[in-house]
Amino acid sequence: MKKTLKVAAVLSLAAMTLVSCGGNKKSSASSGAAVGYSFGAEETFHSDEPVTYSISFSDASWYPMVDTWKSEGIFKQIEDKTNVHLEITAYDSGDYNQKVNLAINSGSATYIIPKIYSEDQYVAGGGVVAVSDYTQYMPNFSAFVEKYAMQPDLDTIKQSDGKFYRLPGLHQAALQDYTIMVRDDIFSAAGYDIRELEKDWTWESLHDVLVNVKKYMVSEGLCKESDYIWSDLWCGESGKGQGGNLLKLMGGSYNVLSGWAIEGSNGGIKYDWDKKEFYSSSISEDFKKFITVANSFVKDGILDPETFTQSDDVAHNKFYNGKTVIMSTNRSQMSNDKASLEKILGAGNFSVYTTAYPSGTNKNLAETSRLECGVMIAQKALDELGEDGFIKMMRFVDWMFYSKEAYSLCKWGPEGVTWHYETIDGKQIKKLLPGFKCGGLGISGADTDTDIRLKWGYAGGNYFYGHSTAESTDNFTPEVQDLYARYGKYKTVAKVDPKAKPTEDQREQLTLWAVPLIDNINAYTLKFITGQKDINADWDEYVSSCKNLNVDKIVQMTNDIYSKQ
Image (cartoon, rainbow, N blue to C red; front, side):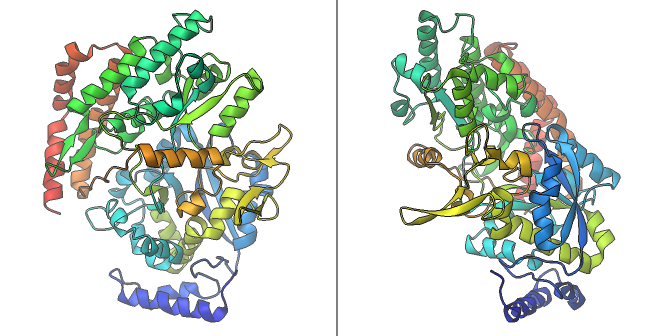
């Protein structure tokens, strides 16, 4: 519900006070941008005059944007509520980062650039705004930071100038999304109780279990000795040739940055809390242990080496058709996986279980940060809108990405149209109305039900992330809630590494070193895992190749930068 005009006036005065007292001072005229529309925390943003802001969109092939998103769905709803028309530039999700990079470098970027995981490469060129200069005009963002003591988290994304250039998704607590699903019926038939195993299992013990599960399957005629029973997704095409999700999970279990996690790491650079210094996890003994265990799955005929090159559809089809018995999943995919199995194998012909994934040398979850991907703002927006118009846009951005109202709208759609509250055990629970389902929320339904993500763009990955635990879990099924309870019992959360903050010249040098180094690390990683390189025989060659590509210089410079902060 909107606050009264009196409260809005007080908030306006407070914003002006913040301007006059803040470290990055703005003229009082800048505060005048507040006149004529709401901007208080949890107050609906609305522009008195129609306004258009350009925005980038990462278009996923498995739920591509269609016209009804603009004519009836998420973008129409935002415009009706705020009087803001979003002019959308869509890029295929597979090369979204590359297209955004080209647009920024060419000066053709959209004003608002969401779905950004690392802003480091954009800072030096001056193409994006230091958004920390404008958070004083963002009451929803500021209130969340204060309520959940997020300032130390924000410090990890500050640059050498003490500012940050990405508005991250803010989580009350770190949430692990990705894990693995297994065919519980086949594991049980092979003599394994997955619920007991997951309590303290390791990747090594999973290997031994899968070897015996395969023996059982061969004996029952369910597969041949030459078949693989694990062919994973999010590792090949969508894993960017780096092993994606699987190697991020496994690597994190061995204190290694790999797969998706190596992006933006300058070559697997981590912090040793005991020695109080940075080092490269990519040439560590932990790394050698990690690739040795990963290789054992391929070498012993368990993990399909095509995992690292194939499309996600191929991996899905193998699991849904019963050719494989283990596959990565996440909380929004779980119900879709079960629905697809039921459609192909038939109800009652299978059972699956989503596990707390194994540990390595630690029991840490792969996710440690309370920050998520976020939003950059192009310098072009400030140049073309002017200071007052830019501040007005930032208040819209604050509403769209950090207000509870917009979060609910982007995630669930309009209340009473696609969802409503139901009282269950004395609690108000959000439920989709009859006739609707949503892959993005992990809520399945009948074939005739309308998927609110496919038809109208709700629950997409571009515009809702972060928020309180209650909000970010409001779509969790009992199965997902149970998974998180087991995470709490069996896994731990690692400390977030501090960050060295290079100057622009230092960053440029680090990037020049890191790009070929990371390419080299990724290439060797996959060759080691798939058996194209021998881990013991070729290890020294690999370490030398990294040293020749300046890994020691990166470590030294990172430590020097950090020691002088």
